[in-house]
Length: 135
Ligand SMILES: [Cu+2]
Image (cartoon, rainbow, N blue to C red; front, side, top):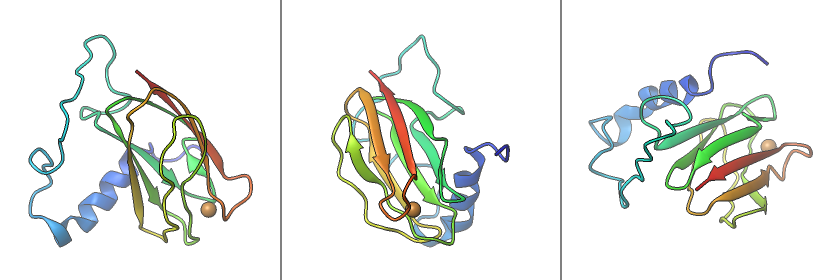
């Protein structure tokens, strides 16, 4: 479906939810355990700050179904559905599956290995997706 760019939706959510935890939307101080690789050739997948790659769960599907990211980036899922979803490991570089989370919930995964990650939502058959992680 051609809707808003996927990158815009989590930003809206962040703006709405931002008042709860911290006063600033700048994340420079809290979560940067490792230096970003700063590869010179390829820009980030989308947007100026390439550290977080958004994926939305909407209409019982992951959007985008194929996400391109790099080692060092963090993928963040946001559930935009009224139905609960989860992010469950299927294949590729191993990661720890998420809990099931409801509308508005999020799950973040730091990408540490290159490869093609396959994952799914165990609640909804056919709700599968892929992350292609470049080194
Ligand atoms: Cu689901």
